[in-house]
Length: 418
Image 1 (tube, rainbow, N blue to C red):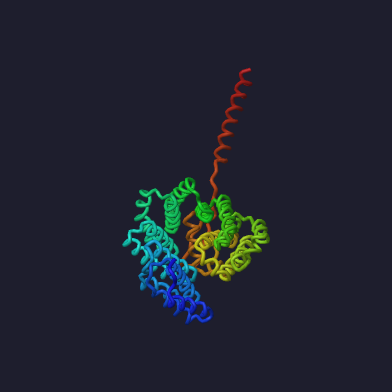
Image 2 (cartoon, rainbow, N blue to C red; image 1 turned 120 degrees about the vertical axis):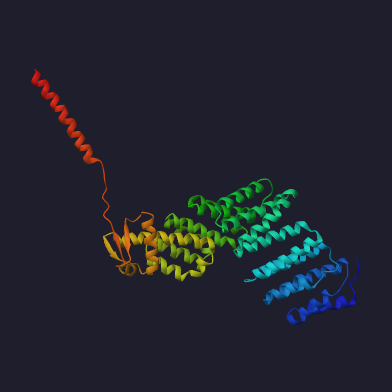
């Protein structure tokens, strides 16, 4: 085993002595990284230094400096696989910080180029999948699908089922982002087929179940959706994965959408409701209560109060919007039902909603033939028609009378003959 040189030992002591002095610690790490040696003992300390320095920069909220190291260091002494692993760990650490997606994209693209140059196809494919995942978070769905289309053929040829599973799963998410439900379901089915032929890690199986729940919810099959969300939640909860909270919210959302208010209360007061208590679950409770009361005014107040919790979640935002439309329609019918002619201003005052929203919804209901009426733009009012239901009772009565007359006439004729 090679012995560490005196200078190298001195730097290690500097690092040890500078634990509480971040400036000296940074300088010592950078000095250590300048050593060029292929001895394993040196390389172990250098690898640790890259990792620790990245952690230090992330703690200081300076992720750009992590990328600077990645770009400016040639990782001399390390083989290509080990160097790529170190860079991937750097991206992992930056990913722990908020608002770093753009930087992560740059870092992924840099590492993909490195892997392409060094012909490291497996790592290149892994980073391309990660880049597609980042594009999904940025809602750049077309760019994400373009990446997947490029690599899916190569991975199929290699028959790497684990990579194919990851590819199909992110492909499903990207198609869902484009509201292409048919393709999203097809990709998820392909992911399930792959997962059945290999060992599927619990967190990946949970992702599959979560995506299945999202797709069933999109089809308004909330009961089936709930069962998938429940499976995903149990896995994420056991793994202490932060996605457990989102999945629990979706479980509650399914119960709200089918009007199971009592079950919502049971979940919120149960052990999981207490474990994940906070603003997100408070929002779900408030949504459930306002939905139970069928009060659009209260529901709107809840949306304003918990805007961040709702708007920040694409799945929640989609279904809460649908719930809002249902309540809006229901409350509109209650207001206009007693009248044959009603002013738009009166409706807006009663419902406390902007006139543009009322006019849009009324026009939609008239076009869908849910309201038999018309909007009078001149008088700014809604005119409801008295729909006359035509039935065949009168015609049937006439026919019956004529038949009876015929019978009576025949009876009379017979009596007359006798």
